[in-house]
Image 1: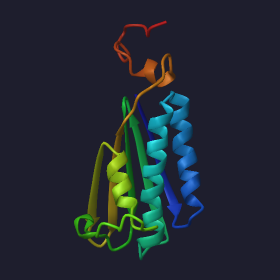
Image 2 (image 1 turned 180 degrees about the vertical axis):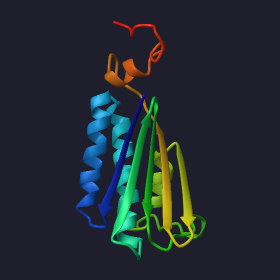
Image 3 (image 1 turned 120 degrees about the horizontal axis):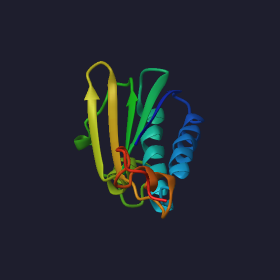
Image 4 (image 1 turned 45 degrees about the vertical axis):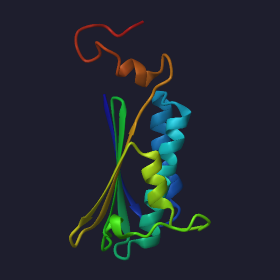
Length: 153
């Protein structure tokens, strides 16, 4: 099973809840467990908010989400100048801002940051999915799906 969402969005704060709702609707329909969906929502919010606050160039950004069997992969691509994630200072424990990278690293199973010369930055997030019992996602990723064996009843 593979589901892809490719969103070209304005660099506007209103795009963040719209993006979250679209991805969450797909994850909910597949029966992804609430805790996993919550983590993905926070990761996505942090990545998109960083683009809106910090990308200096470009009016748009792209969110590319792929649900492939038991993985959700999210790429947030902007047209800013990029950044070196290793050089971003750790925020003070009581800081109100600057915790986005730490939050993404804590919630994602894999996080990668890449600067695209003259094209902006790419944040790649990956999360392992768990499906509820008898969920659509669980049925679509069960053993035997994709061959001539009928799905479990």
